[in-house]
Image (cartoon, rainbow, N blue to C red):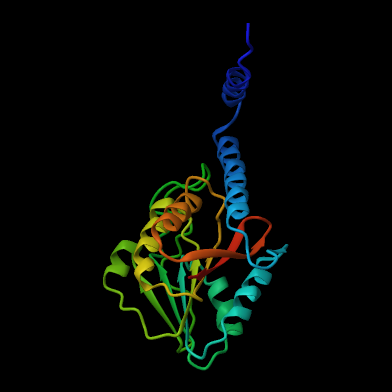
Length: 228
């Protein structure tokens, strides 16, 4: 009698799943996310060595090194308290740089991780940033993007910190007609298998441009560049 190894493993996993908490099951799905990213990167290798860091600001700097035009546009989706936006304001010093932050500031509209219920990350209002290069689009992404007019720019950097699948998918679908070779995109929680990663793979299938992996930090924070 032939042993069905897959069935045996499946039964063991079912038993193991019965002992897992909801939080640990979420972690297990992110293990699958890391495997899926590794598989995708192996099939879409960078033209040069993929840069790997321990601090995500080093991945930010890798993006900064590729923003060499006089009028770059920085779009951040998921501003929260404004830490990353302040970092970019300090370091992206191109004369014509402009920065736009998108956020409802009401927190997550739905559950993310088991310990991140709706309303998590609510701060009520945009951060107190007075830099004249910055503007905020306050509201849910599907509403604010519907009326947003893309400013004139010569290179685009997109910071995806949307957390949820629904939010990330909304942003990426809106973004696609505006993308050009040389633009950059950063994902703050890419291995989240049911969220940013799911939206990423759908985006890759739709866009006519290629996405090249450039840099990552701790396997969680990823930078890509669009090419022909």
